[in-house]
Image (cartoon, rainbow, N blue to C red; front, side):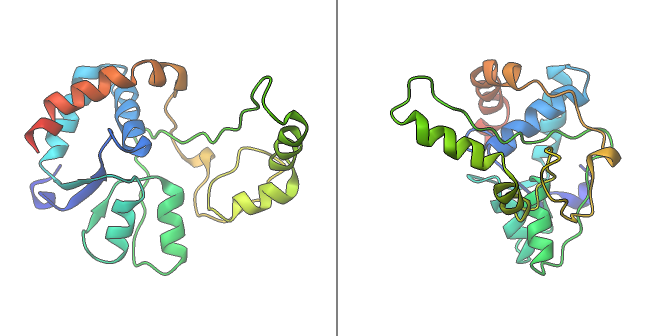
Amino acid sequence: MKPEYEKKVRVANPGTSGTAYNMITTLIRVFDNDEDKAFDFLKKLDRSIDQYTRSGSAPGKNCAIGEIPVAIGYLHDMVKLKVEGAPIEIAVPSDGTGFETAALSLLKDGPDPVNAKKLYDWILGQSAMDIIATWYVIPLSDKASPVETGFSFSKMKLVNQDDVWDAANKGRLLDRWNKEIGASR
């Protein structure tokens, strides 16, 4: 938000990116569930944003090639870029950060329950966990082999994320973002 960062930050549009929507809900929690304070922060941050991308991983990629000096996105995307040689430094907000929870669902009365269950069991097993670890995510399962990302949950201040609330309020919060921030773009 410093003046020297004006138009030097890139982040995704929350209307097209779950990454950016998660940023909004994280900020609400950082500001003790005060949506007005979170949106005041977003309006001030908007002065630094040069572009809202469609994809949550795009800002990091843009930063990695030197197109923009600052990007906001998910940690695993940034770690992957750095491991691949991008000259970037990664910072996790010290006042609180949200996270992405990958999920898998089994449909009741789905068309092929036997194979669906096999896939479900495979995803939760060691070989799939090892594949997922190559995506530089910080795994929650103790079956997953640890991957060195340089980061751990124990050293981060995670917000008390509520995915059910986030889903229930998505339309309303996106409408507010579009009216108060997106409309001026």
